[in-house]
Image (tube, rainbow, N blue to C red; front, side):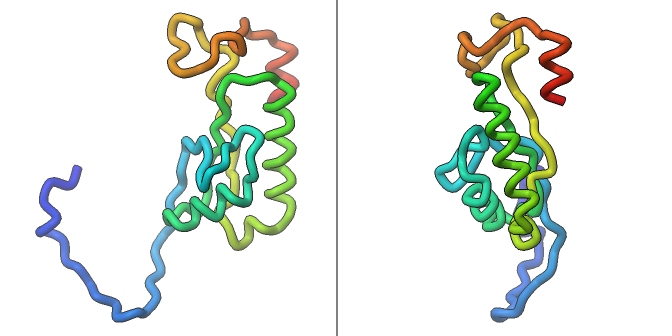
Length: 125
């Protein structure tokens, strides 16, 4: 944890460009007013680029399986479009809900939680 910013040296690059490694965001629900669940992935990627992110995991909350599958397609189409050559790429999907315990559901919507089903899980994977 940074406790004293005075210890760091600030460089004024006088308008020159600076190359640094990009960030990988492992928990992204969305950005730029869009949600990874059913939203515009390109808008999210443009927003993440402004944060220095070069790749991220799209995080999906508990929801109907149809919407999860639609989100998979949207992400796949974005990654295949070639736009991710200039924008942060979706590196994978983090499904946060659906098979959580009702007791520990956090902010997940209760009606979308259900018992794990092996065939359903195989289909998702």
